[in-house]
Image 1 (cartoon, one colour):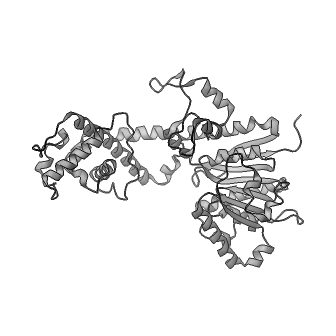
Image 2: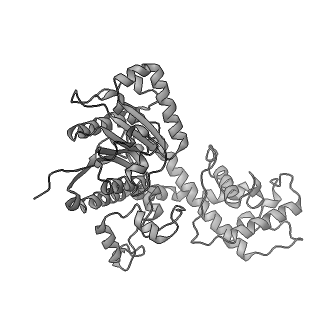
Image 3: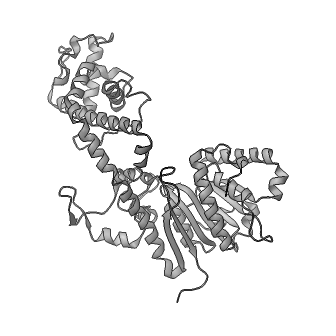
Amino acid sequence: KRLDHRFTNGMSDKKKHEVKLLSFLIHKIASSLSIRHILDFGAGQGYLDNILAFQYSPNNPEADYYTIIGADDSETQTCGARRRHDQLEKLVGKKNLQSNGGMVFHVNRRIKVGEDFNNIFHDVKEVRESSMSTPWLLCGLHTCGDLSPNIIRQFLSNPQAKAMVFVGCCYNHLTEELSVEGNSNFKNSVECKSTAGFPMSQFLKNFASDGVGINKDTFKFSSNIPNKLGFTARTLACQATCRWYLDRDLSIDNFSKHFSRAVLQVLVMRLNGAAKSELFSSEDTSKSITCLLKNCDATNETFGFSSDLRLQTRRQMVTKLSKLENNTDIVVGRLKRGALVNGFVSYARAALDRILGVDDGVSRLVVCNDALKELNEEFLPRKLEVAVLWTLRALLAEVIESLIFVDRILAIKEQSLEHNISVSGFPIFNYLESPRNLIIVAQKNSDPKH
């Protein structure tokens, strides 16, 4: 169904593609089950909600239009959705919307695992009284991280939830039962195990408890190895290799970034080794802390710093560098735009300043530009190796995404006998338009299976 241009203001072409296909599928499922109430998880700006409420009329003339609650725990997104709804009322006319459309309510809250529907609808008085007996469809367009498992658990635990349609994304934000790294939402491992985003199915949990996994040294299946993805693999699952085809120049730039990051790792480790092996004294103000820097003080890169200040700054940096071990993950984080404009030297300078926690350019007191150029030239012949390795690595993205996807379907199927649930999964969006295109559709059937 073609989208009404009055309701697509502000949507990108990608978003229009997604909303058009998902709204049609939701309407088809809801109509077949006589569902007129929809709960949208992670509603964002409410694009999907407005299309469903105001563009899809009921197949049965006697039925009501959709009543939709869009829940999002971001106050910014909720305020934006409400503001956009007010703009629609001005554009189309409030009376026209009310007489020829449904109702949309935007709620700023996080829906907790296993939370009763009465709590969810408490702040929406228009649906509060009817929520107990009304069938609901749960949906989500690119539900981030643990929000996808949350929808599944809500669907399984709430009798009013009769259907579920969602597309997940942001696998890097998933929590894991065997790992709670970087997740401050969980106070202990017991709580994490009951609400973890992966694995969800008992099949994969049993597989993990059997201690079967891949030995990282031999790359062979082995026993007594915990089966968990880890942050790196979950982030890899978010890769979209199709984008390489759409923008080849950008792909080449990305390979250059990966090469620079690899050379940076060598630089930091060499500085780390020098920091642990060399001694400093107040008299020896011209001595560099590594063989990389033997001529730095003889150049004009002192930038007006006094010898005492240079020595003091170096000592502070040496202390930080000495704490970095070879097996330590070095987190650089997001750098300023243009950090790679002038090649490895500008990138390494910005990254060192970030790692050492100093003002812009102060890392010149540790390593000079000539030394950075020499290091880059040393490894430049191996740049193609990084590109090949990164390509092979990226090809595993769809494998990991498929594992997460199948785990969710298995988790629902394991409950299918108790709840009489039918479930399916398939790609819904054009992969080039929207790489995160795997959708899960489930419904509770009224007739028991024989």
